[in-house]
Image 1 (spheres, rainbow, N blue to C red):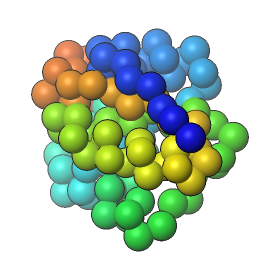
Image 2: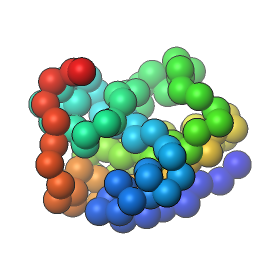
Image 3: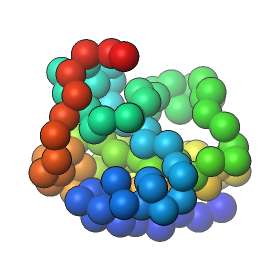
Amino acid sequence: MRFHNINIRNIMSETLKYGGIIVDVRDREEFVKGHIPMAVNLPLEDIRQGNISLPRGKMLIVYCETGGRSTMASSILSGKGYRVINTVGGLKEYRGALTKGVH
């Protein structure tokens, strides 16, 4: 399987376009400090271990802090049959509001 890349600034429009799920692959501590609204946290380490509890029928829009972990996660997820869009630039390039804590 393959995935394609988008600029992180387009994450909300792509999520709406595909009815997708925003997936933050940073660790839980990073996620709690601030994440993109509506994102679910699935750390890269969990993905590497196969601990993935996301629906296969949904598009996954993946991000991290700078883009490295999201690229690795996108490769693993797409290899397991998930439909994936990777974001380039990471949270460092994101200009929207962030949500803090876990909801």
